[in-house]
Length: 123
Image 1 (spheres, rainbow, N blue to C red):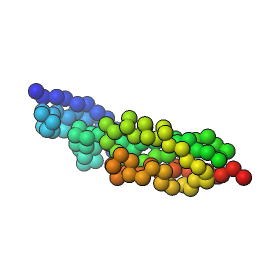
Image 2 (image 1 turned 180 degrees about the vertical axis):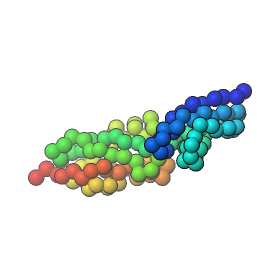
Image 3 (image 1 turned 120 degrees about the horizontal axis):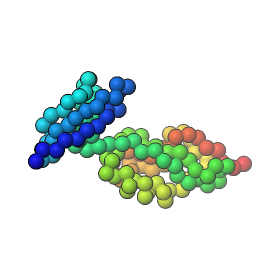
Image 4 (image 1 turned 90 degrees about the horizontal axis):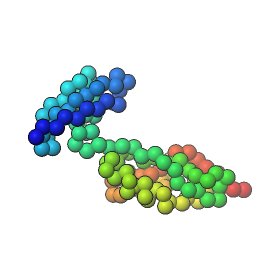
């Protein structure tokens, strides 16, 4: 049975509306993209969507209560809920440096959760 997926490409500012025809997990056709970036994005999105995860973790010994964090590479979209369970239970002690690794190799994806900013310790 043929399945049709519609998506808007985020690979470049054009924001092309892409149509993907699939059957049995195989891509039959991709249409609507105006550049190669759109085709690559559509292929990835159709087979295994990936996302950069941004969130916050709790921080102690600091004037602030939370530290903004992000993954240093994309992780599979289907793993976001599991990743958030780990992030919600993570507590970091200040001081924290920009891009400091907070969680290494999140869910064996090869992605690290890193600090999006530096935070000072209480004086």
